[in-house]
Figure 1: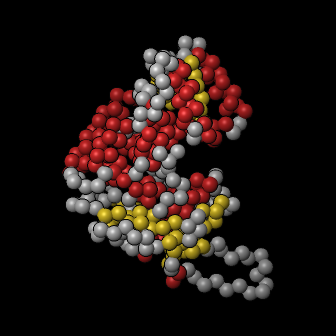
Figure 2: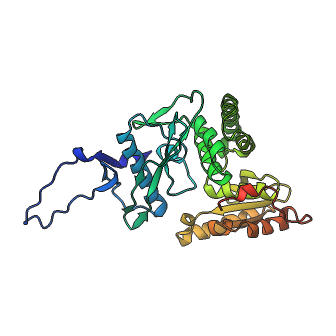
Figure 3: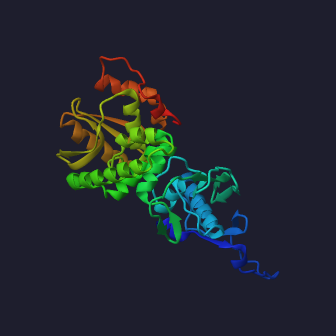
Length: 341
């Protein structure tokens, strides 16, 4: 939400003309970039993006703001709603997506490529998805119309492949359930209520596109996948038929309280999913090693995986199988869960 407030888009007519004389050598023309026809990006966060993903999110927010200026009644959904709410998405540079009450999905607008800092973000299209019946009440975030979070979950489950859907759905669940591993029972109660709302909404959408897939994926919803890497690992386990791991498992050790990203209790196997930001200092690496030693003293085995390894699920599955299911052949039973990896 903070990033949304730091980005400013204006109509061309609202941008003041600035005249420069030949003596204004020290004056720099403000950086103004065209986001779409008639709309320009006039304000950015006062810092360099931390990487390509943050630069792409800045661009996505600018495109949503520009389209909202051009079409004030537009309602955003799927990845476009996620960037407004601040939820995770699997596609760094998604199309801009709005609801339509007509049956067409034509690409009517192209948003040009933009460069933020040192990062170039490719062009994107505007897409519209049609809805049937009466949509749930929408919300307004900083003046932008977005679908209700429950409706957003249902739309992801209906329209997106499992990896794209669950990356965002898990993030929504974490936020709506105010997931707290130290208060697991309260979080589970809130999640139970959220899941009931989603099932009720799917019943209201009887006969609409994608309901069969949505009802399959809803069983994978959880408030305990706190990063896209944890979502990928859960899908990998489901794809290969491994037991469902316990997420955010509490571990009391001699060095204090820790929470494992994933845990197979029968095998006493813990799994940590590590993002690149985690290993930017030697002190973090040292603390991680000491934590692993403390947990292993409790009789557990710890495996670590990074994003590059999860991009090759067959290799990760082979290692997990050595501990979890060594007696059965390694077979993909749900290949759709590995689409788009």
